[in-house]
Length: 279
Image: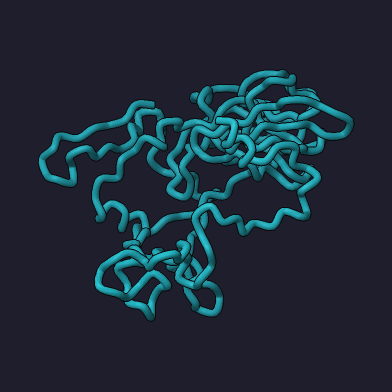
């Protein structure tokens, strides 16, 4: 996929780029596979803001994705569509029973392509198989963590993982972050690379374009008042001598680890931090 560039007719247009939508084959989604999406502006069920800098933006419809294709399905790609709720493209596929599904589109999906799922499926790009049937060294995406629950990992545009080894009941997978993690061999994954690989190279260019995506402005803590942020106050200087960077609620940040992984510690062969150190 190429990137579309603009003439510098305004300061915002200078350097701005957007996606080339030539690979998308239809403008309208299938009505039976969409539902309305309520805007919550980053608020939870009590009305409190739990995610800052959200609100406004263009209205969207939620696409009903099938991340858990049943074994034995034989699918034909009908359309490649744009999905405003994710960075990747989606494919409208039709199975042998005449039912439609939305699945993630990979780099090799085109209109008319045949796809299969299940342990008997051929070892080809876009097919969905159990990890036990996929050859070691293959590139995979849309990986299950719990067999039967559906794809949870490696679903963003251009993302790919690699099947590194199989030992006992588990497969070792190298994730895009560099982490090597164990997953049960019964879990399924699709072969290939998620499409829209140029997504990371898009330059938004203007604040208004961000607002239409539903993202509100972000302000640094050092320019706030002392009542609003630990870095705030003072005469326009930095956030004080010897004070480590913090969130608005006083939590240490920037290289300070806060994630607890006790429940999956035994499944991680190599952490993403170890992979970054070697680079």
